[in-house]
Image 1 (cartoon, rainbow, N blue to C red):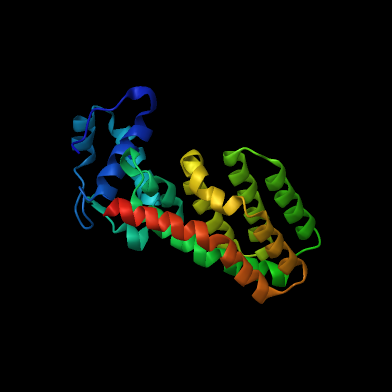
Image 2 (cartoon, rainbow, N blue to C red):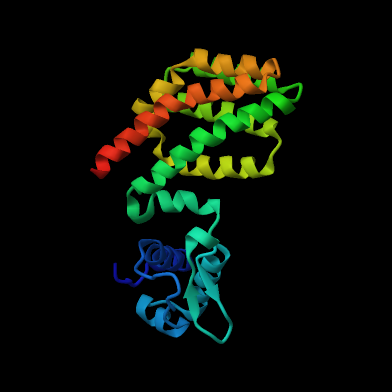
Length: 238
């Protein structure tokens, strides 16, 4: 997609969005040099400070390497990017990237049970009541989108109890990628959020400090909807 003059209501943001799109689409390949600040400012119809700010944001995100007095080079985001890119990668170009969606689902299925296992080992005194409250809210709420939010609250408590900053940051990124699609996923995710007995089973395992049971029950909870969504993705990809 060729670069376009930007709307000046939020110039650095729009410059960032356009350059981000060029990088993740492959139009600007890893190792390729970006045009100079002056040239980018001319093409985009903005000031050089606006371009400079956008380039710094791209550098902080791990998408480019900015060397003072030298060219700005595109980096391989698979090697230099962080989990904070997931929400943008999922909806790059305004549509869901199916490959990214599948990778998020696969991570969810494998990470969730481990988090539940750690929560059973490390749970604090307030965890079980918090989990029971989240499951009760899930049972009481008839709105399919709200039910997904209650499920997210459940997993947030479990993740906090796992006492792992790495898993917590992963949860934040996965949640940020997932939340914009709650409406679209309501029907498919009903196969998971409607199984409140499966949530109860995870809570019971955590309450009993049974790490193995927490792991296996969390996997049993997550697997059906995950596999159903992956199957849909595979069919869409043909």
